[in-house]
Length: 624
Image 1 (cartoon, helix red, strand yellow):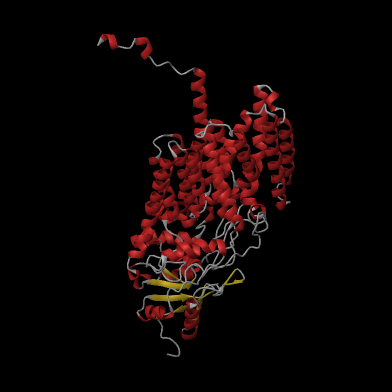
Image 2: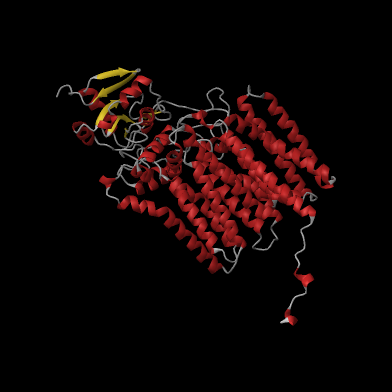
């Protein structure tokens, strides 16, 4: 036994050099600082936005008080109709409300924490292939993009979607690095599946990048890689499809109507209104695309540019340059695999958002933020490490020059807001771009100072705009980035569909009085109308026709039965003109809500409370 012993001196673990320990500690401190700053940005004065999107806040109120409403994502605790999305994002908010009670903070804080988690995961993914500096750059670019600062302080489902897709991207990167890849791909599939339950078919946009990265860079033979991807696909189907199967098998009369569908079908909702219809504009019961900006310029235009365009050209250049630099690398090179993953995510999502002919709101572009940030972190780091090469130095210089000029152009859209910032960014960017051309010849400390100037020139404008976004309260269904100037931020929109009413105290008390004697304290056309009255009164309010007022729920006959059975106390006329949205006529979908409103106004006597017209449906009807 003694002859097999290893000499003691060879078993000793050599201590890590002091410089390595110091570098690792500084890296962890820097990451902690980035995450702390992100948390401060996303959590600061969070409740100033009140209920934010009251449509989802009312659903959280319902889900926190009723398990069936929570499971299906009902708009009210009496389970008349669901929101027009699958409910995963609501499950998270419902849990927060159950823990901390119903208030703006408990509704909004989950999204802020999801944002911090997404920044942490993206930084971890980039660090694995490009190191600490790249991770910090990517994380900062993510956190400081204005649309991220908007959505991670708002209660739309996009926040959870982005977190889950970033987690999936991290898992695919890990799968590309190891022989034991299948478990990582299955984990990625689970995250994508639950992302589907947050915002349905939008998750499909990242799958080509995931598949391409693993097919190109995964370990093992091609046959094994294909089988592994099939396992990933199965995980997507199971983790996302179980809920669809549950809803389809559940007796329709024992669950709420599926909002956003014309036939009480979640499959129809997924494939139609929230699926192919978003691409073609053929959305029965929808609104069509109210914008006229379809095309390559959409992401830079007046609707979306201030949300997402700031770093978009930089990301494209970084991806292209990264592929050039890694062109002779081994097939399994981690940096190139990551560029394939995030670059394809960026390309596919950008093309779809640019040319979609259905409903596409500017804040949807938050789905581009992880791909932009990761591409910049990885690509810029590769260029910096090769800065002694004239081509790499020129690319770095071009990135900074284009980004700073674009920032000045975007800032000029608010010409009277911080005009000095445009000049500062432009001058700093031009100076940094010139210095980067010779960065390979500069001494280490000087070169690092040039790099810091370049990063500051690129991130200053989006950072300031992100801070301005967080300082502005936002409400309604379509929030927008930036300061509260000329109506650009907050975008409350026309009452009844984009924003919810805020009832006065007398009306709130009227709706709440004796509410326990009825299934619904009131009914109103459109989910946002109903949400405002429900949040104020604390009692269920039926959303006739769902979000757009175009779902056939309830029918006139069903509504009349509810009234006859004394299940609904009041009908609130509200501010919506049935069949119209934002000045655009809704020509598809059900007209049941219009028929109900006409029947109520014909047969019941109106009364006005706090300047709102309502009808007491328990009174004897006129002309009976």
